Length: 549
Ligand code: TEU
Ligand code: CA
Image 1 (cartoon, rainbow, N blue to C red):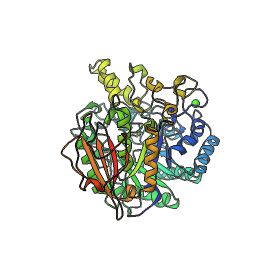
Image 2 (image 1 turned 180 degrees about the vertical axis):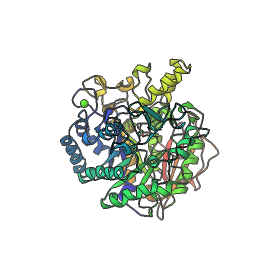
Image 3 (image 1 turned 60 degrees about the horizontal axis):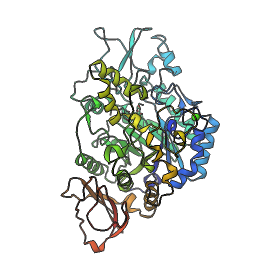
Image 4 (image 1 turned 30 degrees about the vertical axis):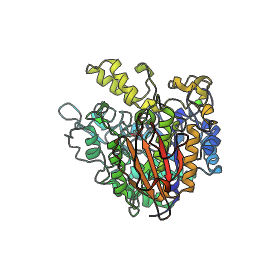
């Protein structure tokens, strides 16, 4: 298997709107990130994935781009961006930008021209179709609820938007669209950016017959209708040939719809497409037929199965990024851990998991201090377009607000978008102005200032794991294998290479648990644990241990 810097690197995801507001307008900005570069260097991360900072009406908080060549004024200027990039490079860190080219904003000049008239040169930059029987061209549903088609009275046609109606899908069949996208990529790479996270890249090739979808769940529609279209690999290989291969960069595709059976088609070393993927199989667990706010039960067994299946599917030919939350999902401690009685222990357990599994780890901002979900009181405190759309849809069908808000507080994306908690000062030190979204009231206990000096703190635990990865190549390039246990609440696995064997034992429960390892206990050394005096005794609640033979 090829050894290369983006396999040993650790990514830290910044959601710029919520990281640090330097000018008191309530919105995080690039100057605020510059203020925190030493903090990021102290944590020990290698690559920063920066969420979209381009011109945008913010219908979907920057994932609806109206100008790819301009930094949004609320984030700063191109000069601020250049200083941020320089500041990262000076500290030996790299920068990934977020490439959102499955769709643009409806306020992009291309779309404003396209919607003018059916003969406009930009008409074919998007998907326009006549309605059918007085309604949309087919039964496709948007990720954000409602039809994936919006009627435009000017030309009495519908345009496709798999996400919000302010995010019209770009027509990648049009070679001019593709060349325009490649120009955007070159512009940022020529500025010295170190690569891209590619938003919903498996969706860029559409099934052009636009046949109705008749499948049991929305996940099925994503996997079988929206993703992995007939020309997706042709398009990504063209992007690689024309642009990506000419730079020493890292590319990670966000992969809704990329299943383990097609994963290698995107990241196989011989494919000349992408370096790795954020697959979402474990993140979409719990999505019922209607998606995120239609929950179904699942457990650790399903998560372990997905991890095992993907490791097998990648073999030594492909690569994934390992993550358990981001700006689109609830905080991992609240979703997979115990954010009340065992918040610190489960924060560290999840840190050990993402930093010792096989793949490039991605740490979401705030995980390093154990930030949790927030309880929003009503829809007016929610900010996410997805939440608002489903609130309207579900309450119109009779669901009462309190029931929906409970769903939003458990499964909604706003949970991950509350301001980073820096200290105990007002607004958690995020900024002087009223933040764009509510600060989690638990900031008085959970904040960087109080965490960073605790020798037994979560921040320190992340630092130790990041340091270990640099000194234990087996954690990067070693093989992975689960060590099945009698107790279903345990996740025990080994990492092995020609010179090292490590074991990781994780207890995902509030109870004490016995566990078995395949070697005599006196041959084991505890490298790191999240309880003092970690040894070979039973695993205490949410106990995590890294052993080396
Ligand atoms: O998300 C796409 C996606 O499929 C999942 O992250 C998630 O299921 C989705 O947010 C709907 O539930 C990417 C971005 O990460 C997300 O923030 C954007 O809203 C979306 O694409 C559209 O650009
Ligand atoms: Ca600001």
